[in-house]
Length: 173
Image 1 (cartoon, one colour):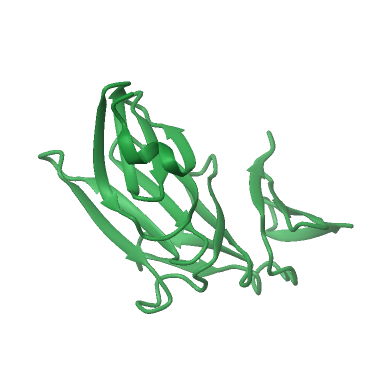
Image 2 (image 1 turned 90 degrees about the vertical axis):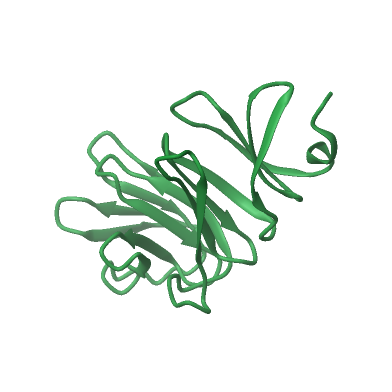
């Protein structure tokens, strides 16, 4: 119904603060405000694993083969695209499984082969945290936060809790 090729293969959906529905599809990243209005914001950059609507002007997309893309709307509403890849050294893996925004506003990325990273706005890059947290796991499938502010990571066969107070980790296997 009016969305053509987007329905052939979608990977992820999210809703932003303006109630737009974002669609990560094989042919690119789109948003729609109604069932008949679809706007392509970014071309295909690989198989999208996750969309994260950070705020009304910033959308993050992770990929199973191309790292991370950030979409930021400028003052005119035009979307600017920033790539975070191994080539530009802004992320330590191209295989990003998940993205998460915690209650402190930090953007976390979990990869298939390089563990967990946190976005640093000062360097405009994702910084690896496995060493800081004494985290041996490199496969991160999901990230959540509990009511105390502790961060929980799923590694596929283990669960890791990162204590927000002392920045240490506890492994549950």
